[in-house]
Length: 343
Image (cartoon, rainbow, N blue to C red; front, side, top):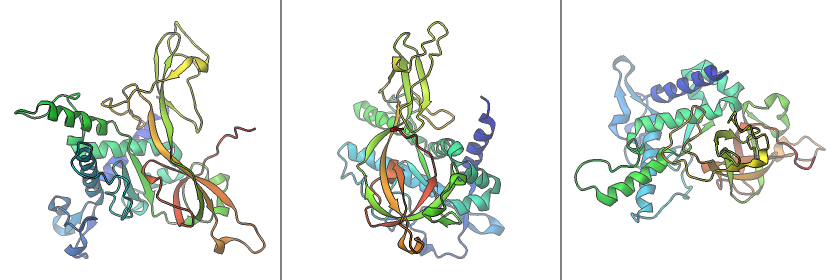
């Protein structure tokens, strides 16, 4: 497809970054290298690279914690303990509080691949789906037990029976999950008043105080629609900040050009694999949780004699319900322009 080259290159280089980025352990005590539960990190995440000394791979460790989280949630769903999916304590640095979100330090990207960091910063909205696809590839390649490669069949030998089939089906749902990337630690944190048109589509961090939060609601990110006239599926229809149907049917014998004649398919996409832009296949829509926050500029940043300004911030997936009214936060994302439905 036209334009796929640069986006696919960003995806490949981001996977390489996640796999290769490492930090030296020569100046750190072993006591510091523990997970969020206080357990020592496994030796598999350390490598002795001769002259470079011992190395630690933070994103390999995050992938391990994400896999552990998904497997523990799978066990809890089968009655194997309390589900702490919504326990948000201590979710700042370890990343294990998330089951589908990888936390990425922007400074790490800059130090590893300056061109990749510049591309992500200047055209974040364009490349964000491909970053998500890279995270999915990285996690599932590192932990193949999350992938149902046999299409739901019982894995392993012996008397797997119904239990093995249930576990395989449960893991196949994780193989079709949508993964997200959360970038942080940008070099500059902007005040709300500095958000102008030149920031549209770019990666930026802003600081503000939360004044109001909405309920958590489902959002359709990518839809699969069926033509009511010929029954042909139109997959991978990205939603442009409002409900977007196909404009014309791809069937040359049908050529249905009425958007109202397309019906959203609600079937799950489990086991369908991922498309190049990070969406999951299989005939279903891609949904995630979302929450809107009203954020006001900090009191110290308000010029004398001016009224405080506010902006709406949309949080998605596992970032919902992590801020409450009165919290002073730094938000990292992209400025977008939403269509005015009342106009």
